[in-house]
Length: 498
Image (cartoon, rainbow, N blue to C red; front, side, top):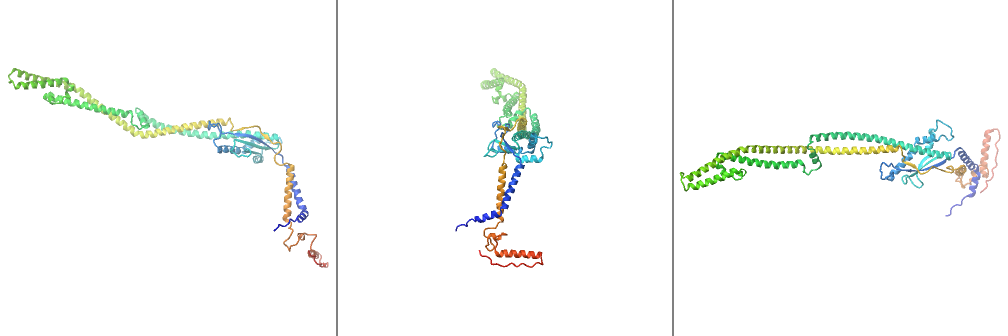
């Protein structure tokens, strides 16, 4: 099924009939465009390329480069917010003065500042990119003239850098205050822990190395433990020697009363007394000889008497020698007992000292670990404080944004010109007028009895019955106005057929 043809004749008739409407809309919109273009002032745009860097004190190896794209984007968005700050724009406008050059103490007003913030100042990324893709951004400003645009751009840049330095300084000051407080608190905690460590070290001053050795290692190879082992060995040897001397002394005391006891004792005890050993051997020989002679001679025999006398004399000599040895052994026994006592006391002292060190080792280890932690915390706080102080010093003398060139001004005003704006407004009026015409005009075929669209238009080309009906309506209206006048009869005519 083919589409219905376009009723060009109908369109032409509608445009002719409603020409005052759409032509009036064109003229009205064109007048508005001309008036707006005449009343508005031209604006020139100035763009200045800037490069953004990070603070060099954060990481010297990066030399001012950002660690990630996120940090770069955050820095550029921060610069954008600082650029649109009222204080920055107000200071820049105050620096370049009013457009007319007159001195105005109220310049700039709040409305002018807000207008400049919304329309005339911006930070944009290079064409075809977003924030974070490159370190270069553009400062873009708009002003009434090209020289004013350059001055405005320079003023905004100067106040932006100053404001950024102030922000960095304020931030560094707050960080310095916080880090100073943290450093002071860390020092107080460190002093408290140091006092506890000092108290323990003073208490165990002589054994401080041993205590630290126990805290640092658990191998057990400490000097006190070696001294304890040596002392125990010496004590065992001294006790054994004392036991030997005591046994020898008891033997000698018994031998002083009965020399025969020396003969039946072990030879190991008398090895330390050569004279008694020889007397013991001589007594044994004398006894053997007297025993041999007793089987041959009688008691009256001179040889036997001489043997008995010799044996008696040896016994007496043994008793004398034994008494002498006993007397000489008393100091040795006392010295040996004193040595055993001394070694015992030394052993007990070392054992008690080791027990005390073992008891205090746990608490000392905890305090020492806390001391190291506090010391590291204070060192870190000092390092961060030095970095913050360096950042504050750099904030007063350096900028994180730098110029890549002078401001570049457009040769022609930005936005549409007077001619473009006028023709654009007229085109908008034409569109509005045509839309209104086709909105209110009926179509080529009406839904009321399928009559022509011209039948609904007042005036010409009406049907006969429509003209009779309109004449009767007018007659009734006139009779209502003049009751005495006779009615006018309108002859009926046949309605022409289409």
